[in-house]
Image (cartoon, rainbow, N blue to C red; front, side, top):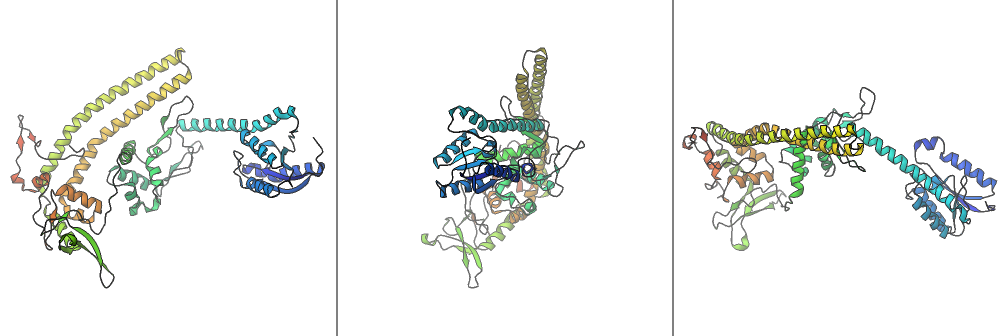
Length: 518
């Protein structure tokens, strides 16, 4: 160690954990030891900097202030003194680069307990070892942490912060196990169930009043709906030679696997289909669905302020094209609600229509049962492969790594097939709910239209009417209906039911549309 007497130095101290702050290499302990070293070697302490941040990089507030101070006092600071090299950096490459950067500013970096003579080439190896050991220690700790985390996740234990709808808890053995939050867990379940219906976008559903306690934003609702942990499963990501795998979790699920998978289908559809932005005015839902009573051209709509400042909305023609048609929007809305109410079929027709829909879905159900049988066969084949794989492991024909990799792959395939089977099982129940919902809308067309969003109103109008509506200011001309709705709304006596060879009622020639669009 060369003569250090009179050298002007700045001290740098660092801790990264609360334990270090209070025990062992605390900031005060480091300062005391550095001060003793400086006093012993007659070193002048000019300034002192400290941090309570990790040493993975140099983006630390205290060290940034140190660099600025050294730059301002250029050629006036000769030494940057640290207690140990791991207080300076735990990344050898970044640490060595920073040492060279400070050297160019006329500052030598050194340790009071691990002093290095930078002018002696023989000490270069020792220096590199001192710089590298903290990084090695970091990597070992990181590896242990990752392995411990993955082990817990494979056991079905969620190890990260609790997602919305869960709170901290412990199981019977005292181990950490999150539990449903009694206040909002039910809302998370409703959120998944409602979104799985496919009638709401993420933006629409998060604005529903009942979900206000969840404080949903455009970003966190997407994270929630994508989070597999709500279905009672955990996704363990691929690592080294281990493939990604999905395991059954120990915590209580908030949604069924089937509902979660339906939500993923909806999210996938929304990602694949890019909808063209459509400017909609909630006060003018009929815009684009009306034509002029006189010239037959399309009508538009707009708002107009009265002398009192109140805004009134009108549907009107394009005056530049000579169309002078104009009437109040509220009259057109009330009349269209009355018009739709008149199309509500009687009880007998609704019953017959329900039978027709069930007949259509029954045909599809037979195909589903055939698919389920095929899935069962494939699951049995995969389970047989697992048994063969285990036999090979016991015989020593394959290594543990090969067994774990292939076994995880088979487990994932079985899990996916089981999900597909459960979805087919739920199809019949969903179909009945779908039918009942459709019949309910038919019975209450006017009321449903009145309460629907502008987007839903326009979808209804598109599916009910084949041509634009014509309003004369008091009532609508008799519109041309969709062929299917026209048949449904007729008197039951006018419907002809065709019978096939087996005297079974058949409705194959009626223009019906099921959920699949066929």
